[in-house]
Structure formats: C-alpha cells, structure tokens
Image 1 (tube, one colour):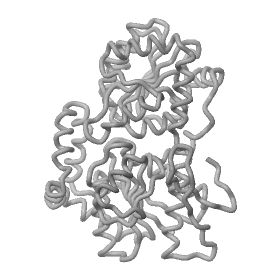
Image 2 (cartoon, one colour):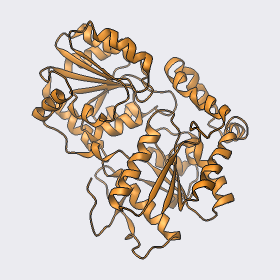
Image 3 (spheres, helix red, strand yellow):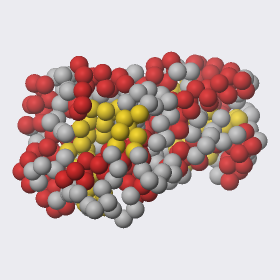
Image 4 (cartoon, helix red, strand yellow):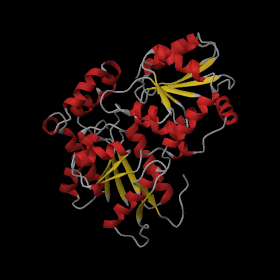
Length: 411
C-alpha cells in the first residue's frame, strides 16, 4: 500500500523522523506498506525559486539567527501566513501536487510545516478521501503553519504542543500526543560505564578520558568551533568529538585544529551511526534542536545546551533543564564551568542520565506507525486489518498511542 511522506531538508530532523516511521512500518507490518519519502521543497523536481528560498534556512540560522527569529514570528499570524503561502511559498503547491499525482498514495503524511497545507490541496484535487496527517517535528514551540492546515490528524510530540492546538480551537480528537519519532537504533538500553568506554574505543577514541560530544544538528550551527576549541584549551584530560553535519567549512576548520590537539579532537561530518556517538558520550554539548534532544534522551545522555534557533527551538532548553536532564550554558564561561563540574561529579552525571532517560519516548515511531496503518486501512481494507489502535498511559504523559498487535514489535 503506497504512502507518501513529505519532508523538507531544512535541518535533518524532518527526514530523520520520516525515516524512523518508515523503518517502524517495515518492522511492524513487513511487506504491507511502501512509504515514499519525498522532498517537494528542495528535491530535484521542485521549482528553482522554491529551492533557493528554502536553501537560505541553513545560512540564516548559522549567520543571522536573530533575523530568522523575526521572520518566524512575523509569519505567525493567519494574515501574514496566508500572504506567504499565496506568494513566496506558492510553488510548494505545484511540487506537492505532482508528488501526490505520481504516487496516488493511500495516506499522505506531512513531516514539515510548509508541506501540510499544500498536501490538503493536492489531496482534495487528486485523491479525495485519502487521509492527510501531520507529524510535528518541533518539540515545544511550534509555528502556526504546523497546526492550521485542514489535515485529518495532527500527531504532536509533547503536551505543550497539544495545548497550542487546543488554544487554536483544534477539536480534541484531531490531535494526539505521541512523541517525536526516532530510529530504532536509539532505543537500545542505556549503556553502563564499561560499555561506554568500549564503544568509544570502537569509534577510534582512547576510551580512557572524559568524552564531550559536540553537535549542531544537520546544519552544524551553534558556534561549534569556538566551543570545541575552548573545551580543548581549558581541559587537558578531556576528549572532544564534533559531529559537523553538512557544514563542510566547519569540518575543514576543525580538521586543522585536530592536527594540533594531540589526538584529543575527533571530527566527523554527517554520520549514520549517531546513536553510537550519543550512547558513548559522557556529556553531549550542542544547540537545543528537537531531534538531538529526542535522540539523546533515548540514549540517556546528559545534555549541556548552548543555544537555540529563535522561534521553533524556544522552550526546548527549559524543557530539558526543568526535568534535570541537562544544563543551559549560553556563555563560554558557563560551558567551561558545567563541564568542569560534571567531569568530577559522577553522582550528578548519573542523576542527569536517569532524568534524560525519563524524557525519552523510544516507542514513538512504532506508535505512529500503528496509527498510520489503521488510518490507511480504514479506506483500503485488507483481509488482515491491523488491530485497533487505542490510547494508553505513557510513562511520560497521557495520550500516547499504543498499538495492540498479535506480535509485539521490537523497540
């Protein structure tokens, strides 16, 4: 049964979430669904003007985050959002419509705020009656564009986003809190100290020093170079591993720094084993991106958050800090103080690991997969219709969707 997953490669979280749900569908319902992940915003078939506009996101959050924050807030009213959709973002309607017409899916799932409203338009024109679902991939603070499209269901990652839907007047049954989907490799049991050291050595590290993993999301943003250089300069007995994402300039600069760091600095670009790096870290340092937080908490990693993208990442740091899973260190001296304290306080680190694990929702992808399977099969009923999806209590909060299957899927 074909399913269409709409993403936008502005950051890496949208694609990662779609891949996690696709993986869960294949694991829970092998051979039954065929998800197609499509980027109508930056993909090869998208209009040049739209690709150029969307490509500005990475440079904007790295170089002028204040300007991005102004644009994010300025487009957050129904009037300005409607104007933006009719003008700047109108090419998205055509590229989404082409994807829907080409694949004629049984279900359309939007993993990006800019694709939800075009998906509804395309559905109404090409495949009337097919459910359109939004999976919100921002954690606490969300733009109106996530919530105002006339989709059939909104899957939200947290209670604050659910409350935003309620304040918008969204009917209670049209949104459901499940969590932010992460890939299965992030859901393994949290490692002990010996396992962390062994994992460090398997990644080419010494395994005998305190390890700080620094990440800035897919765009490699958040002043990573200065923070990595400062940690190396201040602490002679600390290893630093930096995940640069697709920021090639940052990777080149750090590679030159690594040549002078006596083997204490490891530099990687976009990696496909991020779970290993998070699981082996003593501390994870980076901006308060929703994907990083969701993945790190599933790995029970303590977090030191240094920045956030104005707008959609506001509230993420407070969410982590209030739970005891991390600290907020926006200034360099704060970062140095936090690392200096944590590397000599195993009890504090252990408490932060426990708190981090308590925020995790490793089963979110499987729960979302179960809900999508049910919604898709309402219109296309096979002989072996998946069992009913019901609501159950979550260890974190109520409202998590739990699938009842004859064969329980592995996390």
